[in-house]
Length: 413
Image 1 (cartoon, one colour):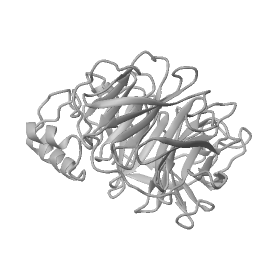
Image 2 (cartoon, rainbow, N blue to C red):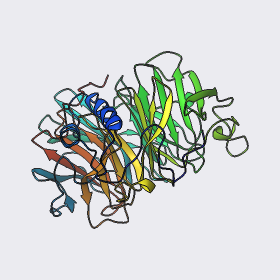
Image 3 (tube, rainbow, N blue to C red):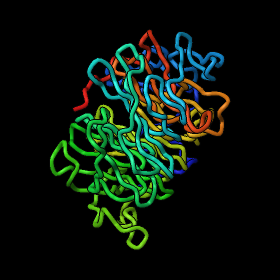
Image 4 (cartoon, rainbow, N blue to C red):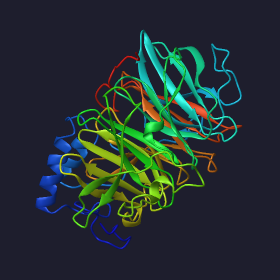
């Protein structure tokens, strides 16, 4: 398709409205259906459906209060703590927390859970992990991937591994064991390019990948055998004028850079996206962000259609800018981290409504990274990539479970 212009009044299939503008009855019924389909626990259901309108403004979690001792502005009833600082040993371990923490995820473990975090350092890279007990006390910390560089974002798999993405032109994806029992494994079949993030659709058995280039592409990988990423088919997306995606085989998934044609330029029909960033799969939809146009996209895997879910250019309040990492919330919404902007983690509903979950103050030259929820759905972990010396990792606790229903409790294998 022709990518919608910034001045367009509609984004794909759903109109983005200024704050507080009432929905037409047809669109309200449609939005109601979308919200009702979000497992009934979406943070937005009560506020949006009760008022009969979609409102962009204060979060359903409540307004942000003044910054706490860690510089975080949170809704009432939430509290924060610092769990790791780059260059210092993680409490209760001998592991020195890596610099430039980026993409992250949570994995269930016996009597607790593990938070994994990439290092986007160009000189060191790799992935670190913190193991927590059920009560969130720190039990250990350790590396799960070494010898890589510019590990940006990634994605978790249904078989409980972490896919860490190298963000440079000859970058690859590395499959990591969150428990650190197995060495990280190079997954060449997922292509050679400036990888950003991966999302796994376990229903249709695809992996979707973003590329952090100004003309980056959206890719789809079909494993030859589900649960293994050694072989498979790598394809690139073309968006037709009717917004339906078609997929074309990438002729040479592993070009020699810079002597051979880059992956993104091998299929002439493929559609460029302006700086692919975070990507997740949730309830039959693939959501991904593009940083150079501040958009969040929604790919409906059943219909094959793509729409713009959120466009900062069409939001008078510009609630969400500097879009970057993304994570699913336990309640069925999308959480987007800002690289710049006003340093917020922003909730985005299935109807395209944005509101802040939290804001970090005093670190305007940093970015928020790696948001992930623990198995209980009461704790949120994330980092400020350049906070302090070269990174700070935080925990936010909400004992009232306002993040939504319980998160999955899968165990690493």
